[in-house]
Image 1 (tube, rainbow, N blue to C red):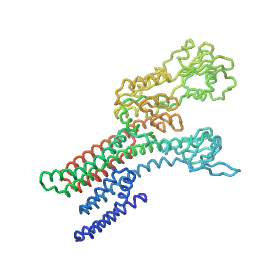
Image 2: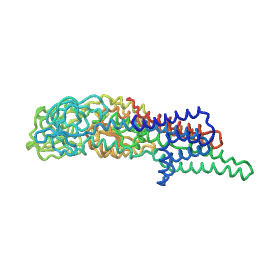
Image 3: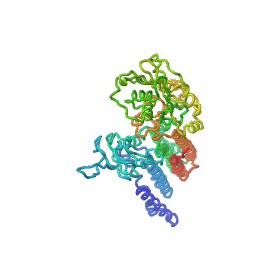
Image 4: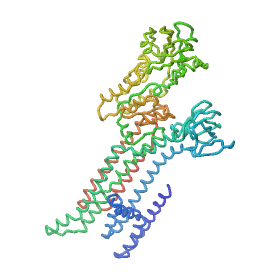
Length: 622
């Protein structure tokens, strides 16, 4: 509990104690009784009165402070001192609960904000000096000592250590960092001393981008929040005019027909009507639910860019996934080398040389299997063909290296092998030399994730891949995926997503999940784009609506579960608050409900809704 909340609690306790004493004392009606009850009233509610006056001064009259001020001042004017004090005290209790709930939600965001580094260590005149990360230029060598946060993205040039990535991914398992590996800002160096050559400026580093994403999430409102904002702007003035009408019209009517108008009775009912009608429960709890959901998910390494995406994710019925890096580990290994002409070593050497300038995972696996340094000076005229492979000159030999589409386009006959994995065909000057089989392993939780999504109500799971049909069908069958489209180019994936979008109903949302690096066009086209394993990937963070910071597929059904829990809480609060208030408004208007009913309808309902809203913080892993 912070200082402001403690101060509010003390004021409430003092007011309650003073009121209890005054109720025990045998006080007669008169100025003394008025002034004695005025003390606990002002102790508990002076800030509400101040805000109400400020709102009137700024011509922003109709808000909950104005309603409370009018209702309680009116109660005092009618001589209902204890009820006036009670309304203000209970309203402040509700405010205290709200403040606590918001604070708890903010702390979940603050935990993530701990990734923001305070300094960077660099050598100045031979001495290690701490400077502002903003001052560090690209290419600078920074030193990160054990226990410190990595301030800027870079490459390790000296040292070995383990890194704590929990603040970014929600996972407690540390990762190893050694010379030559990329490391990102926000991770905590646990063991060894690291020297890192920065590759980005601080404002472009991963930590800065994540923090900007989370801080700006509240600006993207859900349909429910936008509705509540419009509702409050219309509802509050309408309530005030209705209360005024309730105070004036019935007495005038009774007076006209010759009956006792009982003006004080109708004024009391109007004040009760005002207290009951205060929209705090809905106006506070709905945004709080989304805020809590975004905060709770961020602690799990799930970054949602706005409550609108959280709301839409709850209606996810179609989940379309890329294969490589999403459902599989994206770690390719050469499992077979089958030359038709020449030796295995020669075939691997030619393929690796042709792929020497590529950063594609297949190229990396070839280089890893080759195990030697490629003489790049022997490689020239490299032409990469998207979705097919590449052609290059290797020591004067015209080499083509790629999939079956490349062979077909070049008119080269090849062996059509039906084996699980990716086939890399190699040809020289139109003559087929053989193939290399590269296999990718499924992620441990992929099958469990697909099952969890179906259990959560996803109607159809679809896999898109550029792999051969035989490989794609095998993976889809093993994982239990409903539909699979294979041998797709990047543009084909967009086209397939367009087809699926056209075939679904408007109320169902389509989610596309990719690794975020080469899937940006599809991520932006889907109803909701989800980037998986986006730790350190600028492309993912920019293109996606939801960012899963690690490679665990189970984070996707968890994100859907979080969104549906939030929407369930939102709907519970709306129906509960409106139902109770509507019932109490009718009872208040006909004189059955008094000010104590009003207190429950306002503060009681608000406290219940706020407590319900913070349940969104309690995220259970699936």
